[in-house]
Image 1: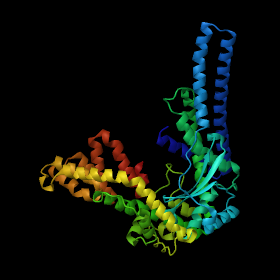
Image 2 (image 1 turned 30 degrees about the horizontal axis):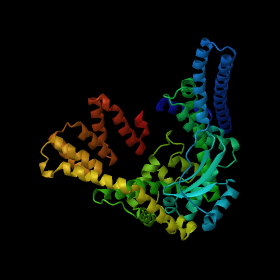
Image 3 (image 1 turned 90 degrees about the vertical axis):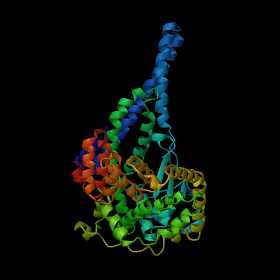
Image 4 (image 1 turned 120 degrees about the vertical axis):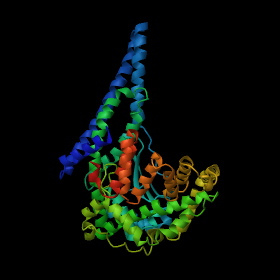
Length: 496
């Protein structure tokens, strides 16, 4: 099933079950049980066939029966192996630094409070990692059969970017996914959908012997079950946001959503690009990445960048690529969407974080954890950083002197190399140089259009449309470029 077909299926499910979450949950439950039943039936039939041919060979040990038994037995064994492989698939548990309760009393007091007020969740481990995220992960020991191990993973960069109340809102959201207020079936489906997505990949491997008997069912079942469970999961995101607001307040929950958007944009647009930009001139990987991140995480984001990133976040539509609704829809559901946004204006900048959640809940242990992440990052990146540095130096050496650029081909070599090494900004002069020598250069026009659209210059659209007319092979790339631009700028209607 294509992405467009899946989107249409999701839309039909949303329309059919609008205002009827219980009916949707029941439908999803029956579909999940139907999937289990089919797998069990195939397993039983394959096992019966295997036992039957073995019995036949024992009772009638002839050449013909042995030949039939081998043929049928191999198919049955392959089917049993395929299904068994899916049932016992081990999903990797999250990695991180495990926290001991006695060392972090404030944090574990908060977890106890969340258990009492949001969900009675018991975790096998509480971890700290280097991600800008917080998650509750339930990993089944027996695939779709369950027997779950529960881990709570807290990203230290996230804790260092939020104030204590905002962090409480984030954890309340995560705990709400384990809440039984909607019935155990909702929690079970939330976990089953994740398990099925992994198991389908394993059983649906078309190169695996024995999977042929399962492929038709998988191709029919998975998109339909996934669409129903997807819509249900999105409803659970709204309910988790509501639980977050109940535990803190609507204002805190709304502010947290905006803060996460802003800090996430800052990391991807500023912090990490600047860090990796150093690789051009430094052969040794930095040893203080997370210490530096800690220092900068609570510094105010300039108002101009806040305005740009919040605008993009509010314009971004809800997509079927993610169960999380858009920022606008989530804020509307919380009844905290700033009125100025509805009028087409931007909200006021967020208040500064005076004390980070990491400082409040981890106390003096924050330094120790930050240093450990510094050490781990440096150990993991040292060799790849050096290799990349050497590669860049080699490319620079091959390019030669800028004075030697006398034609479109050489200018294009510079444009491609600088775009890869330093990014789109520094490459612009070489793109323009290429077009000076050859105004019709296809690649340079594409990079020019891409750069213009990133700067919200709509003149790039015409360049893309001209390129599409010249090359049918370019259509998919061009559509991707336009889709990204229209989505980012809230002009989704122009994609039709």
